[in-house]
Length: 125
Ligand SMILES: [Zn+2]
Image 1 (spheres, rainbow, N blue to C red):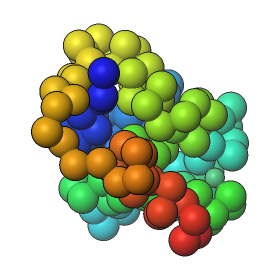
Image 2: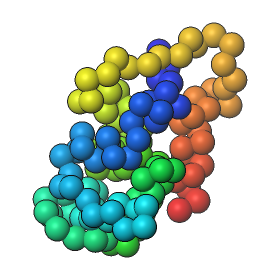
Image 3: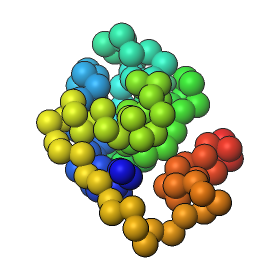
Image 4: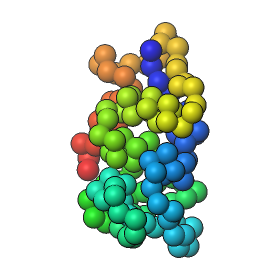
């Protein structure tokens, strides 16, 4: 079964992903959240390498150079592949995993379209 990544992203804005990851409370600076990076300094309680746009959900880290969506943050912080990361995020957040019907969805070379897009955006980094 395929995970509805768009729905996972809707349910888990960046602030919720940070709380699921157990990240310390971030400072707010001009609509951005600043704090230690959950990817490259997961045990830090203080810092400002990590910068996230609280409204739009994008983030980047000035330490490890990581960036992406809220789901990317969880994926990189846990080291899980995209689909497993989405399932695990729902599990830890206490949400049922949203699944898509597999029939009638466009596929690209036999690869899941969301995963193909994910690989494409990773390859561009
Ligand atoms: Zn980092």
